[in-house]
Image (cartoon, rainbow, N blue to C red; front, side, top):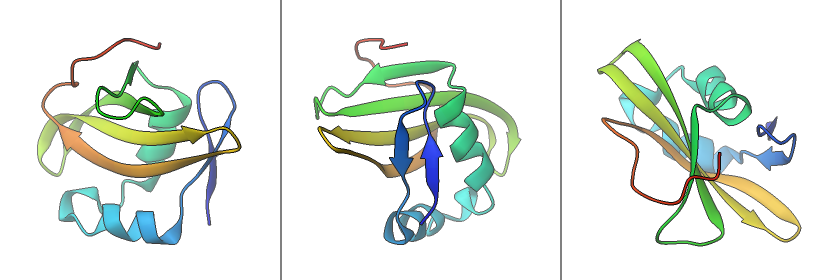
Length: 100
């Protein structure tokens, strides 16, 4: 199981099951390095409006398989754990409170 670090150097797990879920979307195949980069060097981090324990990390990428898009990596932070829930491309970041 890959262990990644966010921009605050907190450990974030990426389970095989979650990675398989992400890679089930053809446009996400081969984007593992970009997922790690988005966590470590986000351009924007927003608090989830639907889950107070989740944060949405965003970084803009050009020339992806589906054009110029924002990569969103959703991380759930629990008191003793942090893990990636999903990752996907989007045209624009969701509204919410900026964390960074």
